Picture: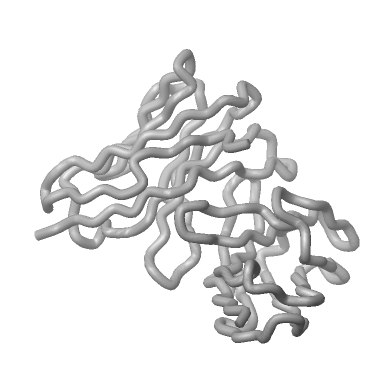
Amino acid sequence: QQQVKQSPQSLIVQKGGISIINCAYENTAFDYFPWYQQFPGKGPALLIAIRPDVSEKKEGRFTISFNKSAKQFSLHIMDSQPGDSATYFCAASPWGGTASKLTFGTGTRLQVTL
Amino acid sequence: NAGVTQTPKFRVLKTGQSMTLLCAQDMNHEYMYWYRQDPGMGLRLIHYSVGEGTTAKGEVPDGYNVSRLKKQNFLLGLESAAPSQTSVYFCATQGYNEQFFGPGTRLTVL
């Protein structure tokens, strides 16, 4: 059972444009929502994360928007750059510092063109 | 600090052969994970460990075994490899909530 649904599967954006990736979850116990970025041939790395006590978190050009009632969250990449071309995974888990296993979305391959 | 390392980086097996993938970490994390990554399917959890001497099944454990004899090492074994196990395998450790991934092992089973 896919508990975190991610869309779109792939995305092509022009340089300078806005990239938007969406995720939806089902498990109301989820309390921590990170986004991971993966470059070809590398392991995923944490990009930005949010907890539901805020509706938005911004770090540089990357913003997470969170809608608790809709059980949805999204990643916005402003002023997208060719160096942002990568695969992005959303994830979710309970918060707590124990072995809170992350449930990952299926990934979005982003290509930023010149 | 090396972080999370994986050995080997690439491997080709014939159906029925066995092998062990090694994950090593110097981050002193208790929790370690093995994932497989397949196109269009994201990261699927195979097995995980919450500490030395402990292991537990994840989402897709069949055909794999694991051991955590030392805190810093987490081994993934394939006893009799099958073509369906062709994949990229990632090990990860977990800090408070963040997971740190190794560089991956690309395994092909012919």
